[in-house]
Image (cartoon, rainbow, N blue to C red; front, side, top):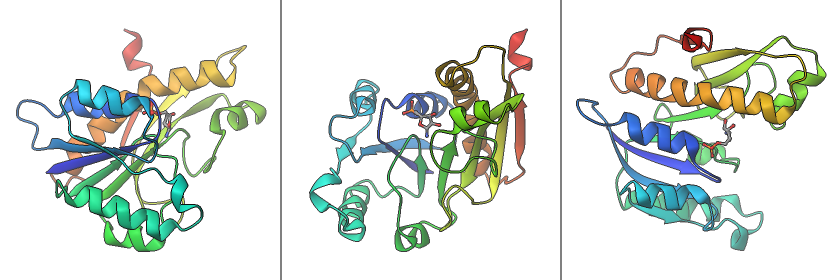
Length: 201
Ligand code: GRF
């Protein structure tokens, strides 16, 4: 499978995905696209030898479909057949989602259906949750709510801040997303569940 990765920020999930697509893995990363030309993930992708593109969303203002037309044009240059959203912070229209139905994944830093949307770690702490984590799901029209393909859980520790909790979750994101991708590209949709207790060996 030809995988395109969309990001808005540092791209640590992109790095984990790219590093997983080696050897006998049936997929290859063909393009990394950002809505922010200054995104740190673009430089990391270039360092990894991956083609990159930037489609700045700001000139389009609230015209999401005009932005997405440019996004589709950038994607068409490498003809991916799967999109991984990885720290991509733009909401996609139902038209774009429909065009990629069944071929677009996203990672969200909470145990969906808990905490769709933003500031997930602060919300989990505010609720006094003892457990938190991340979810990889298929992207559908409803934000952060498609079929769940995998989750990873971490304990909330005494004294956690949103940043310390986010850092613990991020480690699991980098385990979960490559595992889900590996299964997804061979048609395995069985949801997987990881926890960071294994990695404490
Ligand atoms: C991560 O928490 C991810 O779950 C969220 O964006 C954050 C940064 O991701 N979507 P990355 O380092 O840019 O991959």
